[in-house]
Image (cartoon, rainbow, N blue to C red; front, side):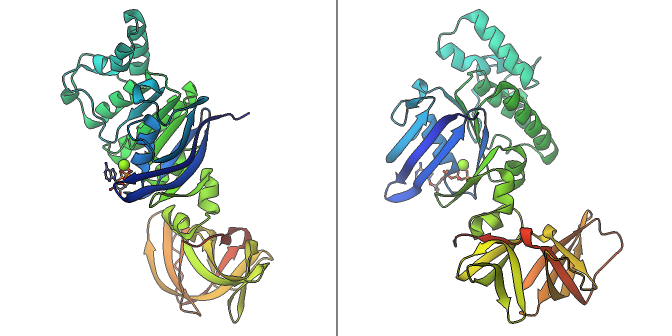
Length: 353
Ligand SMILES: Nc1ncnc2c1ncn2[C@@H]1O[C@H](COP(=O)(O)OP(=O)(O)OP(=O)(O)O)[C@@H](O)[C@H]1O
Ligand SMILES: [Mg+2]
C-alpha cells in the first residue's frame, strides 16, 4: 500500500513583486522517486528550496512525515539536499564532508564512522576518504555530495540536478547506481532535472512544470502517451500536434475527406491531438486495419539517424508531420505514400496551453 509522506498544498512564492510559483499542489508517496521536470527558470530549484527550508512560501502548506513544516527552519526538518552546484567544503576531507551533518547532530564517533563508511561504499568512494574535493574529478565530487545527503537518512532526499557535471557515459552509469541505491534504501527522493530521458527512465512519478505552474503529475508512460497540455506533449520528446474539430465523439474531423479515430471522446470544438513520430508507419499501399487511421502524404525529406529514419511528410492540408521508422535497413520511402497510426496512439489533449 502506498502512503503519502509529503504533500505541498496551494504553494505560492513571490520574489519581490514577481510570482514564480503559482498554486502548486502535489503528493509524494513513501519510497518513491519523484522528478520535477521543466525548462530553465520554471521554478524547480525554488520548490526544492522551499521543501528544504531555505525559502519560505508566501502562502500554502508543506507536510512531511506527519508534520506541517513550511515555517520550520532547515536544520529542524529531516530533509537533505544536494545543491545544483554541489557545494562541498573545500577545506575538509571527503570523510569529514560526508560526516558533517552527523557531527552537527552530535552523533557519537563510532556511529559516524560506521554510517560514513556505508555511504562511501554505496557511492563507490571507499579509499578516497582522505582526499580533498580539489583532488577529485567533478563526477567524484558529485558522488561525495550525494553520500553526504544519504548519510542523514532523511525523510526526503532532495537532489537538484546532481548529475549535471558528468559526461554522457558517466551520467548514465551514476543514474543507474543512484536509482538502485534509492530503491535499496527505500529512500523517498525528489529529483530535479530538465532532461526528459532522465526523468522518464528514473522516476516512479514525474511532475512537469511550466513558468511556475504544475501542468501534470503522473507515471512516466502517462506523461509520455497521455500528456494533458500541448506543452507537456512537446516538452517530453518529439510529437505531432494536430488541430482537429471535436464533436463529443471518438471520431474527430481533420479535413473534408478525413476523420480520425482518437483514444478518447473529443469534446465539441477545436482541440489538439498528439501523435508520436514512432507511432506512425508508412506504406506504399493503403492497407489499414480497422483500428488504424490512414492518410495520403508526400515525403518532403528524410534523415538517416542510425536506429531510425526520420521522415518529414506533408498531408493534403499542407500540415507537416514527423514519422520515425525504426530499423529502416535500406528501404527509403519517397513521393506519395500512406501514413498509418493506431487509434489508441491518437491522443486527445485535454487542455490548451
Ligand atoms: N533569489 C531569487 N531572487 C529573485 N528571483 C529569483 C531568485 N531565485 C530564483 N528566481 C527566479 O525565479 C524563477 C525560478 O527560478 P528557479 O531557480 O527555481 O528555476 P529552475 O527551474 O531551477 O531553473 P534552472 O533549470 O535554470 O536551474 C526564475 O525566473 C528565477 O529568475
Ligand atoms: Mg535550478
